[in-house]
Amino acid sequence: MNAADALETQLAIYRRMTGEERLAIALRLDELACDISCAGIRRQYPDATDEEVEEHLRRRIWMTYRQKGPEPALP
Image 1 (spheres, rainbow, N blue to C red):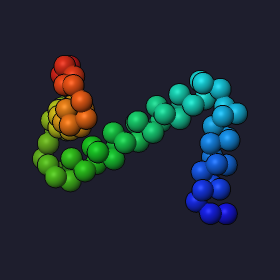
Image 2: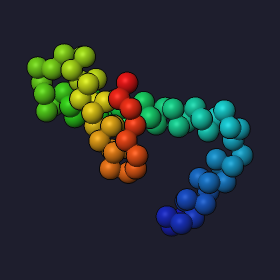
Image 3: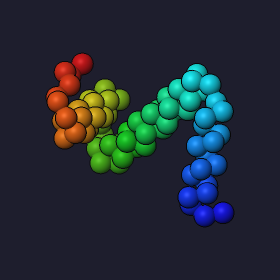
């Protein structure tokens, strides 16, 4: 199986899922991305508190949105 066939198989599986199932996957992927980002932040700032790590993560997310389009409001 090549990459194109694998992608078609994956898309076919997603099409058979309910919206709720696809949303659950998206939310898990979002959580995984945040966890990976936080691990990188912790490596970069080993003495950072949990609150500081979360603030760095918020800034990174904000900077990503800023590069892609209109600026979101910071929470």
